[in-house]
Image (cartoon, rainbow, N blue to C red; front, side, top):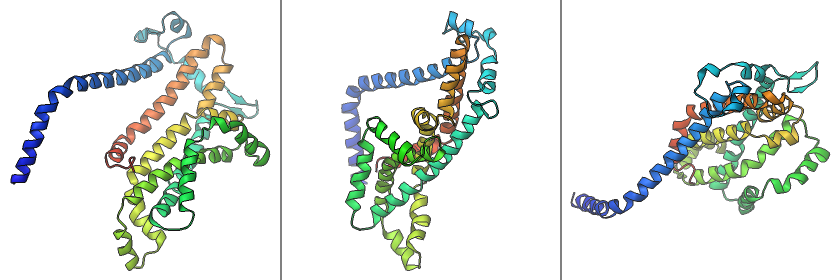
Length: 304
């Protein structure tokens, strides 16, 4: 009890000593955080509300977003009924791009939470030759700029692998981000005591059973976090689809193609509707799993 009281007294003394000095900095930080938050909120509200306004009204005053008499659903109607790609026999609409995106996202998420997790577990818990090489390779994959290798990668995908205009090509390109996930899983599993595995081995469990039944479930917060970040990255990815999947566009590329095909007076409002649709889906996904992400961060899942 004395030790606890002494520790408590020390902590209170530190608070009395440093709290007044830290207060101005904390107030400034608090104000800055709220300014950033309100800026993003305003940007989304501006985007969403303007997507319901007519082009003429938008051009007169882009910030008159609370004049609800100007609201119309024409922009959203154009968004979902305008052909953005394909042919007369096989037209491509915005909802087709949504389906394409969800197919790609589902496969990328499945790969992102399995392959990096398994390799991270093996590197964290087993000794074998080439272990350091795998770690260095994953770090190298993270720091190498994607843009710098764009021409080489495109020639490889087009001429050698013949994976342009295919979902497989997009998935292969998405695998380039596995290095970061691998490091996260490796650090996460390294922090879990091996005693759990030894007890399971004594009961006759195999290596795979130990991974699936003991270690993998404990990584649930990290799994959800990686799944959400993978979803948001793939959902908003314009460049990869533009280069490798131009004939079967994703939602981000589809919104751009619609913008380029629309008449001048309809371009911006319809594009705003497309961007508002994309942003809303991302916000809904994040809101559904917000608690899991915060738990993952507080538990140290992203710290390693």
